[in-house]
Length: 403
Ligand SMILES: O=C(O)C(=O)C[C@H](O)[C@H](O)CO
Ligand SMILES: [Mg+2]
Image 1 (cartoon, rainbow, N blue to C red):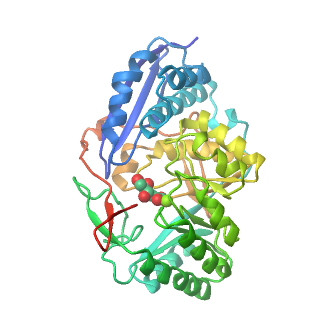
Image 2: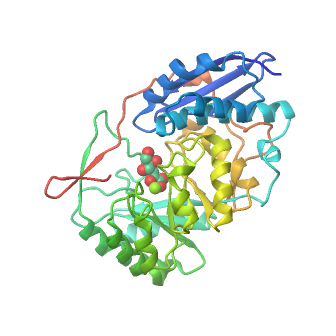
Image 3: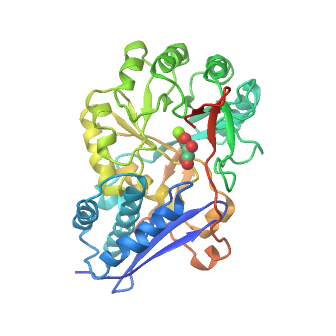
């Protein structure tokens, strides 16, 4: 029995907003968990502080599964990004504690390493096709084996995935949502040109990926997936909004381009049909938004039965705590596919010192016991929370569209 003595929520903004849970046990061991939900951070902070922390005190930190079930079933109101991110933070922190007590890096507790490291993909983007390809070349020169390509759409002022300042891409860019204008017709013209040029210039030894960010209808997505077939993408991500899982059937009927979806999913129920009907190739659900390691393992086990591999979300709005957890998880499962890797800012890295390292296209979680990531609470105090929203999208006629 290892009693939970305290649990605290730390909200900070070192380069961007993060919500972190720190759980301490009676013997002084502590664990950290990420609870960041981009643009809705304070809702999760309140869920934790007001509704979860009081129920944790005095419980046995070793009973990870039981605490997960208690928080999930016990709330009566199940699922949803706020609930599942809060439960995820508890779950991560408890796995961190268990592995620290065992004196092992977490991946050893999860079954040990299945591979030498986690294959990652980087983000290359530019206003033009030429600029995007030039960015991709920089990543390839650094050893990356997989690169996501996003380029500006001629005629649109801004495009998802394309950074304005050419350094970092942070979509939550204002204290009220920015309004972007979107045209699927314009987008559909440029993407096949981007990948045709990329294969010409980058060759075939590099994995190429693309994120459509849930903006197409099923038939538009089917057309794009078909148009992209000659360029052999690693995946086409978030082709359509996925609340209706059957949407993916139409794309599948028309194309062999591999499909990935799931960064906005928060439970196994969001992807059950997609997996069981083999409508996707990669599931992007991640530790923080899908109920922690305990629940993501359930999703990955189901996926393994149907040849679906993982491709965890790893944008910078997921803190280094989530990245560390995802790397331990990915190293230990048989059906790992790829891990998204966007670099955090120096401020973020200073507040969250971590042991994971990049080498030769792979990330490895390191050998420190636990998750191998910490929060420097003193440093975090210099970066108070700043309200920030994700943008919204309108069509050219003013109608609301998916962002
Ligand atoms: O990284 C990706 O694939 C994304 O789509 C990033 C998301 O827009 C971002 O995480 C939203 O908070
Ligand atoms: Mg995405």
